[in-house]
Image (tube, rainbow, N blue to C red; front, side, top):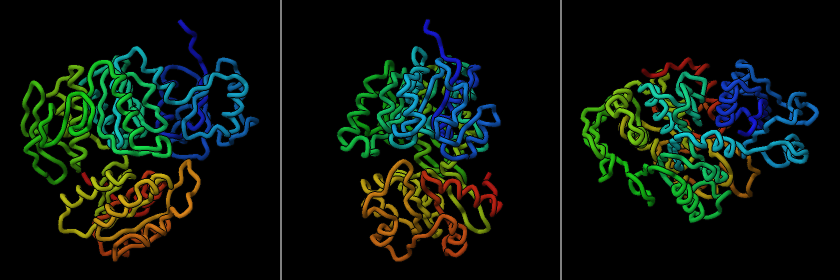
Length: 447
């Protein structure tokens, strides 16, 4: 048996996926250290858990223990090759691995349930994690997000099953060979990596071919497997959906059973779909469907996924939506639950490349709101692209009630608006602004 490293150094440890892997290594009794560009809530919590973290990217700043020959270096795809520490480790023959490969190795030879898709990966994995937790399974879940009011994205009760997200960015998911997969959607994205929609879809086809036991595929996705959907002829089918004050009631048909009057305590038809994918995946490894369904009324929700707050007479929905399809899902949900209210979207576009690739789609979906407020584009790993700006988006929007604001003007914009329902959307640092808004405004989470 190959000797396992005892020391791990994570470059980009503050990322959601990286922090979960760091926590897993710590749980296994390893020595864990890390670097990140900026201090954050995640890095603060990791340090409290016993993981020393650097915020200086120089080689000179490295911990002495990192220079041991046995140290395993893990880096995220967001870290460029020019990063001083990463360059040093590669040039000096350290054991260096990308996060995706490291996670795939952790899953190797273990029953693995992996959720892939352009939209819904984190929420579907969270549903799956909740189901496995409430039905008493032995599992380790590595989530790309957090349950509401829970600061850990690693949930572990054992290692009979691995529950993971299969991320298509940088073709990361092609390292995985899962037992069961769920594929929620294959809407094109990350064209900075794939360049063409055909290449994007081919990657999903390859991932699908690497699944050893069963694929669970959203109805309409052109891949083989058991299908799932709402009011469609699928193997796993939700029907007779009724809207409740804070969720849904519905009936469910599986390949072998019928269930009626099931309740989910979340808003959004896309959440019904994410839940159904998770239920189908759990069913394929013989988790009790009845017990899984009973747990849906206690699903805690996922941080920054359709998170609803009330502020005086205004409703605020905090969501990670950063693709036109995801924004459309949020808008559809608001129209269902708040049909007579004025709706305002406050959106921070994420990545210059995504904004450029889906420019017209963004303009179209944003016009569905009564008021449109944009923030500057969040660059993440990218450099600006000439002519791709939020200012131009505002100019090109065919809308009479639109404007561009700074991040620190969100609170003022909400107070000055005639709207009563606000969708605060984006995958960038708008999330941090929303957390500050919650603190300043003393928002109370809706029960």
